[in-house]
Image 1 (spheres, helix red, strand yellow):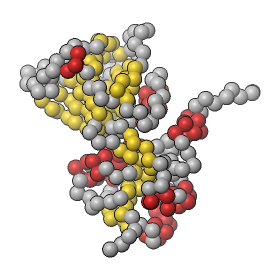
Image 2: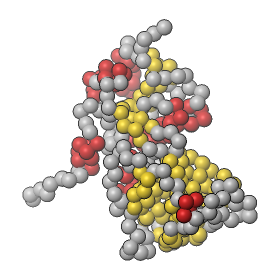
Image 3: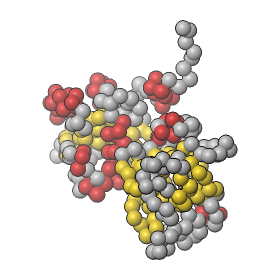
Image 4: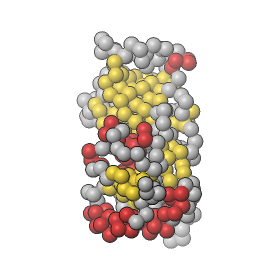
Length: 304
């Protein structure tokens, strides 16, 4: 039996450099690892991932978007992911190919730091009569499940065409408080993880949250209110959002990659997924150094 680490190799071959790089990299990798599966990532899902061979590590070749998708697919396998960046930003995929080669021994021996990332579970519910409740202890029991997915970055309700404001009823921990928190008119709302706090959440004016905190950010998109500020809540909290008024194009978007249309009287139920994802970190970096380098956080003014 081989003592080499067992790898899942996940490559985004729609990026031209990935195929060329892998062709050159495979002989080096074959001497140092046992590649147990190399599934086409466009055919992978959480259900399909359950049938993959056992592995110690997943290596993802692509950009941050590729890593997000594979995190959703592999979360139930509970193996760490290492991202090799071929995209623009490389915020989650921290390694270059040279970095991976340089730190390979540490990566496969568990000497690199890993970051445990909260995942979101989002469900779309509607009752038997086309009605749903955002609050109340029995909301889930009396509702029909129409859609369910997990997200690493964020779950977004967006107004969509014809781009009129929508109306949402927001409830936080409704089973505890037996009431909704507020009703808002807006272009949508973002529920993000700490991993996603530097993505759409940041662009919409939400807070930057340390990536290993157990928390969610709730950030409105263009609310018709001067007083609706983004909030940070415990990841143990449950969120219910009742769609009171929607447009034809109102949509639930998962990590900017999956989507489903929404209609009035549906409920989007959001909670922490029971499992989290582990990302292997580049030993030469830390989250705040990455934030400063990639996002220009705390950059000093420049002389003209």
